[in-house]
Length: 308
Image (cartoon, rainbow, N blue to C red; front, side, top):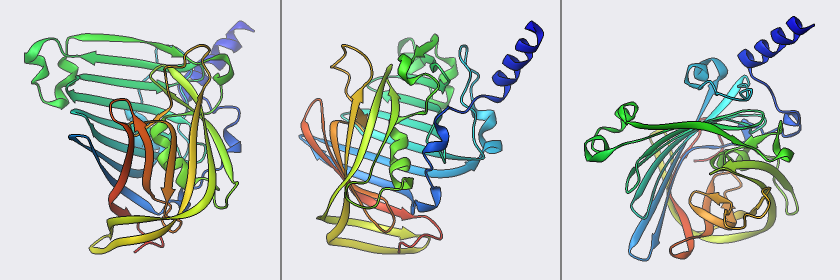
């Protein structure tokens, strides 16, 4: 009997696992009509920039990128995987993040982030059934800080451990907050009152992200919508979907750690183009400056969508 248990455990470790509630989400990548977004905001004496690139892959395409966790059973990639590459410049801090999630469930597979300028760090989170297993490297001294970004493996300081989930999140679908940019577009959210929720993990904390469609609004826009060689200027008022996003922490007694999306904290309002289902504006707040509005400046429409 013990031998059979060992074989089962080895198979689970090799192939990964699928969360128990994964089948209930049903996010459809065919609903998503965008492939790249560029946002800007002016805050005090700073400019804030965020760029998002969305790619679609098969499990075979990304298997070699996935880190083997030191603890827990890794979340297995599904047949179709979405990759979000997020590049942000917030108050002098530059971050590039590579997020891999399963297309149909939203379950996070892995997040790789690289911080430079004011803070140097390279961190990989591999998501498992019991938590997010992380490996991190930091440079020691100016010589290592000046190395090109791709030479981060030469950084001297290293650490790794499991960031365990609260009991209620174990073996459930957990995504990365950045994955919500795809998930909300791919979700069956269309009419006021439609809602969904999903667990998100960031910085050692799990939040229950709740998204609800509110009354449509009209907002002012000024951006380029591109599809291959064609480009259309979208300027003036545009009718949009209004989505209210709120994250509630699952951890007990830690009110300081707030839900965050693209650097925006607390309750967030997203305005989404109903045609391409691209977010055109996000309202939230940041620690330093308070209320901030991220406005889209450039939108690339996915091939075959109903955009341009």
